[in-house]
Length: 401
Ligand code: ATP
Ligand code: MG
Image 1: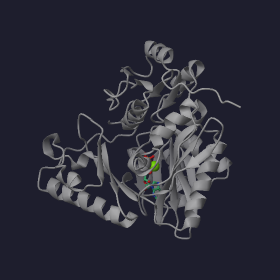
Image 2 (image 1 turned 90 degrees about the horizontal axis):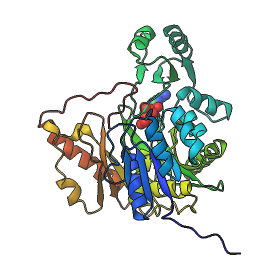
Image 3 (image 1 turned 135 degrees about the vertical axis):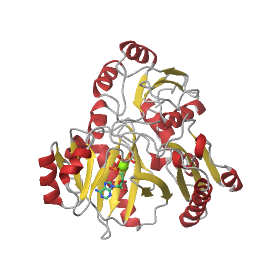
Image 4 (image 1 turned 180 degrees about the horizontal axis):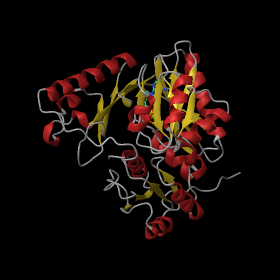
C-alpha cells in the first residue's frame, strides 16, 4: 500500500518563546526549508534573524494571538513558562505539541511532583509549602533541603538552600514566591538526563543518557556517554520513555535524574522541550534533539538517536565575558579542531546567563571532558586577570535572555 505523500513546505511551525532553544530549533527547520513563526512574548529573542517571522509582543496581546494562529499550521513551545491561558487559546486554533496539559504539569513544581508521585515515579521526598509555618514543618520532617519556587523556576533561579542550622523563617522571608516545594537534599553520585522523543503514533525513542555537572544549580558540562553501568543507562531510558507515555507526550522532552550511590534513580524534573543537556546531539548524534522536535510536531518519522562520537558539551555563561561585555578569546576553541562553537547572539552578558555552548568531540568521554575543562580553565584564567562582569538579575520569575 502506498503511504500518503509528505509535503514539508506547506507547514509553518509556530514557536512560543524565542530563546536559544527556539533559535536552535528554527535553525534545524531552516535546513529542511520548513517555515517558522516565533512569538517572543516581548523578551529578547535569540531566534530573531533566524526565524521566518517574529512577533515581538507580550503573551497577553490579543492581536499577537490571532496573527500567530493565523500563520502557524502547528505550534510548539520553546520553554515551559508560557502562560497557561495562552497555551489553551493557541491549542483551540492550532494543534499544539506537547499539549497544554503536558506543559501545565511541567511548568509548576506542585503539579509536577504530584504527577510523579501519583504515577509511581521515584523522586526526592518533598512537601508543598505556602507559608513560613509549612516550611518549618517540612524542614523538621525532611531535614536539610532546598526550597524551590512552584512557578517559573529555571537554572536554579529562586532556589534557597536550607542547611543544618539554617532558620526556615529567614528562608521563607528571602523566598520571592507565594508557593514552593521544599525538597530533601539528596546526596547523589551523579546527575543524569535522558532526552526522549515521542511521535504522533506514540513511538518513543531515547538518546544515550548524559552525565551532567552543575555549578551553583546551573548546568556547566554534559558528558556523553555517561560514565555509568549499562543497567543504570537502561533504567534511566526506560523511565524516561514511561514518563513520556504517562503524559501522552508528543515532541522532545528532557528528564533529569539524580543517581544515588546505591544505583537508585530519582526523577528531578521534566522539561517539555529540547533540553540544554541535549545540545551535544547537534554534532554527536545522527539526528539532533531539535530536528526530532520538528519531526514529532509536524508528524514526520523520527530519526536515529545513535551517538556517533563521545562528546562533552560546555555551557558558556555570561560570567566568562570579560569586563565591558567583551567576549572571551575564542582562540582556544578554534585551536581545538573538534570543538563546535554555538553563540546565541544575546545582547548583554550577565552572570549566569547562558550565552552559548561548545560541543567537544573526543575519542572517549574522559578525553572530551578533559579538553572541555581545560578550555574553561583557560578562560577563567583570562577573566580573573580582568575586571569581573557585574552581577546579573537572578530573581525568581524573571528570565534574563
Ligand atoms: P534547570 O532549569 O537548570 O533544570 P531548575 O531551576 O529547574 O534548573 P533544578 O533542576 O530543580 O532547578 O535544580 C538545579 C540543580 O540544583 C540540580 O540539577 C542539582 O544540581 C541541584 N539540586 C536541586 N535539587 C536538589 C536536591 N533536592 N538535592 C541535591 N541537589 C539538588
Ligand atoms: Mg533542572
